[in-house]
Image (tube, rainbow, N blue to C red; front, side, top):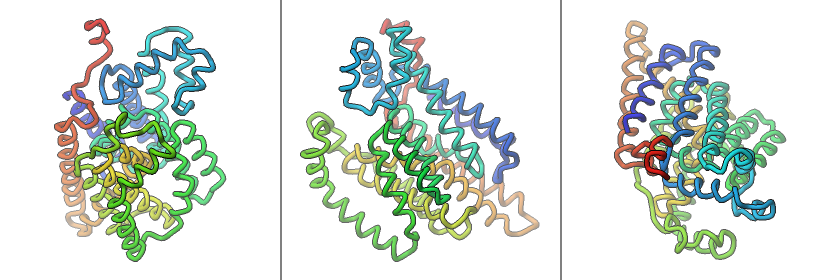
Length: 370
């Protein structure tokens, strides 16, 4: 797991001088930082071998596609948006590795452009991207992360009131994973102000869904998602650690408490609160049905790249309220938040979150003859 710790330290060591500790200093420097970190993420994802619980599934699919005709490719029970670049790589080779090498730069370019363009402080967003396990998610759920990346841009258009572009981008996101179509009603739900009465209603409704989630899952797999039966997919009936629910719950609580202190217009902050609650909600369902936690991935990029930096900056500003100790207080608060997130990162690695440990490369594959 050494490579992951090096990546985390590097993200902060490079980000703080370029982007500023609590406040973004320069758009140009932030862009340089995002380019470097995007390249690092893409490289690690491209050359990995057997890293992540879904790696072998994708490797088998990419290899088998070499021997499929057009009709068979059309019958693949997966969204086709991600498969087109793979087909192009297979003009030149039968190996599955180049497919990962082509897809990885696409995925992290989308993510880092989003971070550079919209994050209040990109280094904090990248740090959160790592510490909250979203990078590890991206090493596994490739279709979902591509859908989430496009969907994140869609949500930005919704926050600006441009619902036509929002709908177009949400539909494009659906070409990578059908779950992204959930963003279409979500964009309208975000028009509801996130206040205490609404939150009480949400918690009551969420509790009811949690209580009857087994019946809901059974109905869905009987009539709609018939390929996701409990026999074929154990993650339908097995749950995840409460840690993931707690970490996104803490983000939501922090954002809700500080919502009047967060920078941004009212519509944007309200949407981010809904994203944070949605991430918490789907992770809570994941405690009973691991597969449902993947729906939360649709909201993770706005959470880690937009909301967490806003919370980070607001906390630093509040701590530096006394002029005489402004810099020291802000630095202490930033350090405390970083230590807390680093502890979470260590916990995810210790639990081998999504099977990302140990990290191995394709060069080891050659040694093993795989």
